[in-house]
Length: 121
Image 1: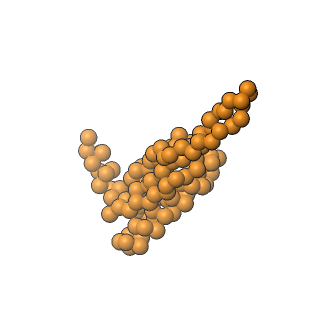
Image 2: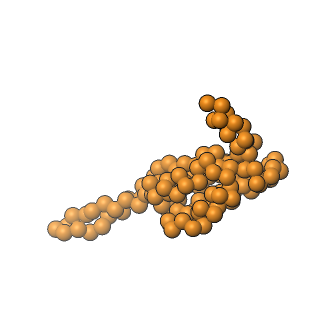
Image 3: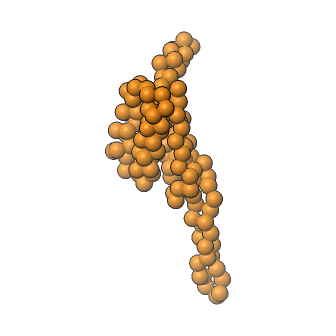
């Protein structure tokens, strides 16, 4: 079984949150949480909230054991850009882009099957 959690329209660029998402991808929940607590990146608090939401989603639906869960996928896609003008010299205007992103995490409890399949090769 798997569950998904999403944050949309986050006010952080997707390239900054992807660095944090790569830390937790494919790891068990307790290892991922401890890695995020000691990460000194801006997106780590967002990913912690997202991971807690995914855990709550899967335990509410199926009632699975939390120790068996792992992060199946974690990704961040680009969202819309908020554009505003900044006054420049000689009456010109410079565009400032504030980038947004959409972040998603999928949590699953089928970790043992994936490990066994990888060991066979």
